[in-house]
Image 1 (cartoon, one colour):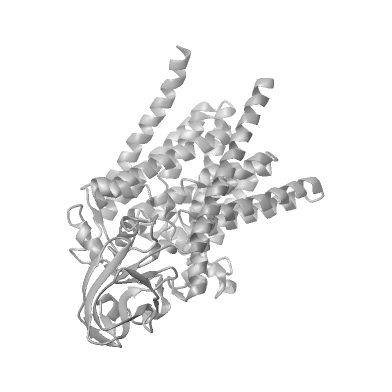
Image 2 (cartoon, helix red, strand yellow):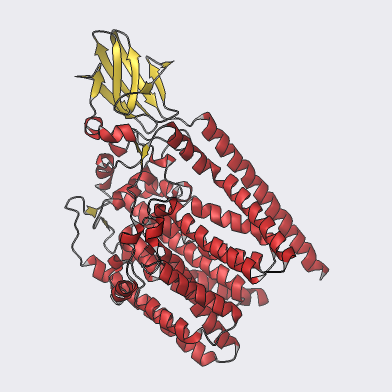
Length: 554
């Protein structure tokens, strides 16, 4: 009977999370179709997921990206979106994506719920935080409008990461391994989110050192585990960043355009003004978080030390996300990789909601049950109503993308994905000649020749007749590791003047095949990540066994 009583609340929470996840999907696609609104980002993400067919054999896909052998998978992390691929194959790209969104939303609810339960040990507060965090305005903007797939997947791992990091700062040193695990999963989800999260971790790390000046034993241990974290996270993720750097050293790569942070940063007044609307296209705080900001300013003076640190850091991140911070000083520096400072609004949202729920939980713990419950219910209802209104308003806005591309339906999306192309991560030379490459011009000594072509996910074959020997330039991008077969025999392929694959062919009829492949360095990097992942699992198992023994001893 006791087990049944314990199990019932768990089942009710799971049922609630399932209902909320389905509701989120319906808000995204009430008619079972997706919409490309102001950009083709929707097609980029759908294509990059579909292009993961054969990813373990080759990082280059020839079946999609207009059949030019685009290597996006080498430059854009894909591990945490890989579960979407079987859903695509089973349900179709659109319906598979919606099922995946439901699973990601459910995982976000579970992750934030368990993380806050670890933080405050209360079910009511954990439930409140999970709903507020998952249905926050920032996440709604990433999901419903911006198609920030990597960003909202990364949001699954942010709550457990900072709970584990807090444990480390409170001298529960064994939690360092979880910090490395959660951070690595963020890297494998979205690189820019990892940069933003890394900045926050670094600032809090410095704050902990400053707060413990004179406690040199604490400093020594904190630095010790900081080095362990960096080394472990680097090894866990070398399977991604190692091959990326290898390709960039091999040849210049055309990446996304850099931003001037001082120009892309919103003025504080403008950000707050835009937040008073329900338009998720504004990528602002949203009305609820404006109210939360006011609440922080009013209550931060009366809370405890941890509350003041949490509230102060939250307000700092708000200013850090705007032009109040002197972003012009970081022009043309590696920091500009974040593209626009508003990316820090996601972290602001996380800490602001944590501060709010923490305050309500303290009210509840101090026997102010009615006041805390009213505040919690008001917060949840406000966020859910604003989310619904924002989704509804977005569905009634005009799209800038013309039909038939604006509406993405399950029965027509396959043809659109095959036609879709984007030029980020082209070799720089190929970017200059993209027109002839995308026109599939096969050149022999610089002159166009006729050739039939057949493609699969991991290779492409041309059949042609040559009246003389010469240099054959194929319309497929040249990356390090690309393999070339001439009449089923390996031959040497080099980079052509237009950044594509070139080889010498003798006179006669030939079949030429170009295959994508991982380099030897890439395979070593993957092996390192797998071995370190195994080591991390062993460390976690040992820690778990030690905790169990300690519990039984007590």
